[in-house]
Length: 278
Image (cartoon, rainbow, N blue to C red; front, side, top):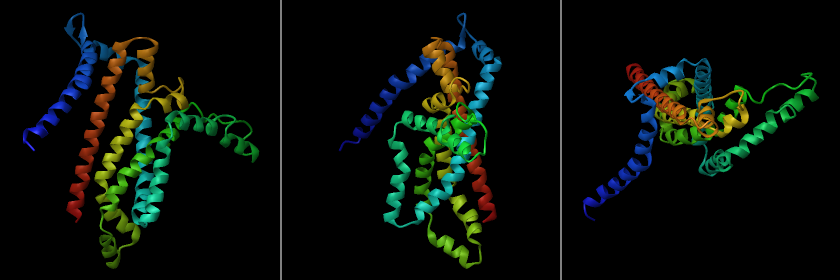
């Protein structure tokens, strides 16, 4: 095979990304930096000064961080357990983990509406055991968005971590326990540091997925708990304000890049501390 063939494949992919992603993105963002024909940040200043936009931005960041942390806390022990079982059970557990991803996000959100609604399973149960006198407003809240988002992205975190956990040699834990380390101490000082790369990748996927998700926040949060993705949809499709929609898109891109950089910096700091304690 000619040495030029790989470069031809690379050129094809580059052209596709350039014409179908980069150029449309630049063309949509360019007007947001122009005011009366001159370069300006007035659109962004006006947008960020609006109290409502600020509340939507911080609500989105708060929900994304909470979902990311919950997925990390639930994903690490679950992935560690799956990685440690036999191949027969591992296949079954992986299939159970992937099963929610095979269902449409709209169907999953409607299922949570039936669970969290005023006449849903939770309120009906609490009323039946006389723990509450009237239904609790669980739906159309940040709590509902967090629950739905965790259910949506937890499989992604688990799948990312299982591969990392499988690469950790079990002899390392056996050696630590032989030297007198408690199983929890061995898990904390061996498994957690070695699983940092997978945790960072999974955290980025969960955070960006939650930040950009539309269906789950719209169905479980409604217009009462607007997030950046639902506000972007409203600006673009309902109001036809493409400039404001482009501003929102750029803010989401910058936020994602900032979080990715922060998580990578944190991973490097943790690795340095691990090397110093080793």
